[in-house]
Image (cartoon, rainbow over all chains, first blue to last red; front, side, top):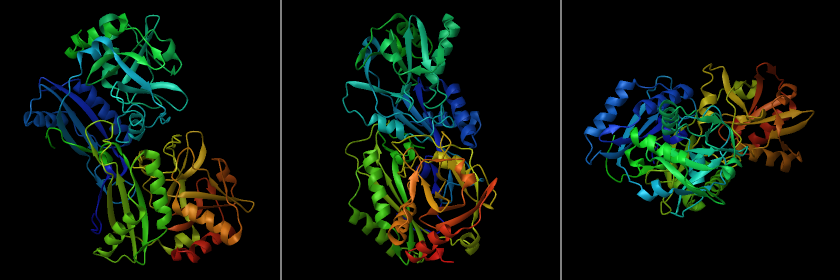
Length: 274
Length: 274
């Protein structure tokens, strides 16, 4: 509590005015750094926020890694960019600098079974609003994900998949989703809502450059889940995980999911190896 | 920067997981407290957050007022409710308590001309997403308002009006909007997006109880602005302000706006008196 005249407010906590990146640290290095940095820069551009130079950001992250009190062989860094301080009210201070915060956490290794047998998901009741202005970027306005994640406490459910308000499949609360139908790999377009994950982008590139497979990026009706041959999810921490069920649908683990896992394992995501 | 193992995150700054109320303090008392408290409680219920008892909240606010280092004859209190701390990730800690914060600020008196002659608004390019789950409440996810407010810096423009993604008129960045057409008072339904303002509610009640006027609360097409006879905006700090222009539309100050200002002036909003 405070009552200091003219006190300035922190816009991240007051309005969610900012962005963040959750970065996997492997062998003391930021994995997929260039994709994280690019998304952060895109986010700054969309929100109209100043973004520090890439080399300065990386130097700050590396300094945090070097100073870590625990091992950063297998860790997670959370980089946040706040719009900084301003007076009260939605109007930003045009002279305010963005404030970068970096926190490191030991990372949790998933059970090998998750990679081998797949995980169970649920279809969330919470729908994502269509807001092209915020789609794709990772802003600090994450109440939709919070509400979706609050729908379950069963530890057997690993992730929740979300539709938008028009019933399109978009992504998971913390992951992107891919479906395979008659050997075609499809992932939902992230143009109206959802977060454009760095691992989603990395994998789309790997499928194309290493295997000549063009991933279809398009609108996906929620109903397409039920008729998919394979389903898998991606994120920057765990890489690629097969989805074996999203009730009432169940899927077999198939060759395209295994291919995606192999590609990931050979390209920075060793933990995806089977 | 920190790298403490197992550190917990503040969910307000990480995800905007919380709510706030901006309360006018007049003569050392919280104006429209019961409406603020009710909206906060509704917000907690919608977000699935625990809400402290009303008497405890009010006692905390009164203590802050009593301890203020400046006069609270004409001040503003910002009450925030954070979902508290949790581990990293969208999942809340079911044992976490909500954290209440109260900050007091000296309030700014608007120029009398604003009440007498009205203010100029702009129609924002930023559209509000349709998200019934968050509509009406005052959550800490306010990037849409921030982006709308960032559209102008001209101090002659007092407020920005916003439409939803379907083109319906919803509200201002910090206010609710009323239009008058052939002596009928209309205000947009706040069921898909927007904030349900306490002054909006107070005024709807005053119009009905003191004058027998039923305000129409319904969907309002953006185009209805241009054909309105009068337009005014409301919020808990300034009460009722006539809108004289939202380019390219201009309006005359009319009898219904004056009536709304008189009702406000006689019922707690002395600053609205002409």
